[in-house]
Length: 284
Image 1: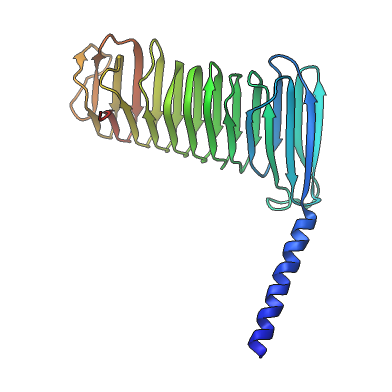
Image 2: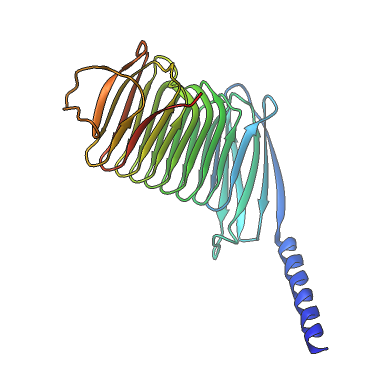
């Protein structure tokens, strides 16, 4: 009997706490009318931000607040929209959390900042700037845009990003690029791993650099690249038959190689100090 009563009390307490939490949750929806190539900025200390292409000439921001310790500041000046999570005294990662779901015109430029994230951008063709500390970053289906990502240790994933300029900087987060090509694609990580799976486009400059993290670049047999790969202390492997070329350093089997594949349409540099590098041919 005592055990049954204790269980009942525990269930009641859980329901009470859940009801209290629900009562603290507030949902707000903001609407802004914008013109061609609008600029959208969202700063959120704690919580995710998801941005997708939506209606033409309109920005719709749906924000879920989890306590009264945070407020939403908003402003619109001309074609620029700014939204900020304003933390009040005593707010922490739990009470200061805000979840954002945002719809913007596909040609809008977007700047997002969140310490914890995650940050998600999808189906845009405007410039994208994403910054976070531990935030997971996910960018997909972006075309003809500048994409800049900067994180400390959050993982970064870019998928189907084409015909643009890509720059990713990470201290220790892993970076994964799938079907990413453009005029310039630069990735730099201190200790995170870098994984590229694509075709290196045409007439692009690709630079994948990690101080101690491994680099794996997968490309099809028809890839057209001028490639240089070097690791000072790590091992370097290559699956492609290369036409050798002269370099400013000594190429040694297992630590460095340089050469061309096909018509060498794109320039590829794979550089690490102590990480392993593998230029891998995709299995058909």
